[in-house]
Length: 424
Ligand code: GLU
Image 1 (cartoon, rainbow, N blue to C red):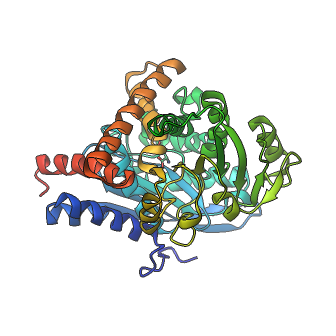
Image 2: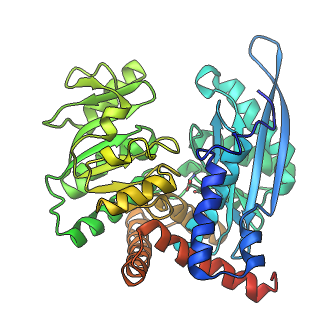
């Protein structure tokens, strides 16, 4: 795979083009200054790295990776690192821009960044993953730091990967630097409540959105597309906190469906044993596409970008779409869902529980004093509700869909900071 492989720039499905088009729409509605708009359409910096890694069979394999810093006007760049075979620079650019909007909407003093390595972690040993993680930090460690850019987990990266990266960075600095990375294991300066924070934040949003619609979330029916960290914890917490009945879940191999619902513990145990949710004895197999179109109260897209597009938006029957995945819905689909009266909780808000607790982790690392889990939950709840209502109020007063409202709040905050700094 070429290191600079870009998605087709003319394709509407290029995530970076999508991110730029979303910004363009917000900029027009806000009558944003031309220079500020142009500045925000692009990352401020990006680094491409080439990584030689010794494999278990004695050969050396060359990997390619990126780190993109979209905008740090409001504070250091913040965002996860993905390990994925289909990673592209444009995906990382889009994800970095979405982090800028997410941290601004949540009103946490951070900017937006993202990283990625083109690799297939499912085919790599723990030793190979450790050497790859350390090689990545050696190549771009000087680009990172608690006051510059703070990575975190994203797709197919784990607290263990964060621990290796923290260790490599600390070796380079000659001292421990816990605040350089978040999503760390608890034993290494991680925060209580970070593990399920993405899903917890999403569930808080669903509760608020359901209340606004007059929907009783107890007994409400849900389908979850994607069963990684965010999707599986949404199953657990949806049932525990809201009394939801989850009738369908899926992963990259396919989906499962039982109209009577099934327990999180059973589905997770089956996936652990077999490597996939498919073939679950308590449900029938269905396709990922069919799952998206089920007649449910809440649909959680929790996997990759661009799963709800103009091709299937008209067929979506859910009353609420809770975007735990980044970039799950295209702008064309947004318009269709809005005109069909579907409430969409956009990624910028719905999955922001993760970065919000990452911010709490940084605060705890800086002070060297660690909070109890209940304290993290209490602070997360407050942040999520405040952001939810600022988005909802903007959507109602300006008569627009939630994503545009979230953009308007976020872009307003970032441009205010840029203006004060004299950037335009
Ligand atoms: N990767 C997560 C996201 O997309 C978390 C980022 C973070 O904790 O910095 O929001």
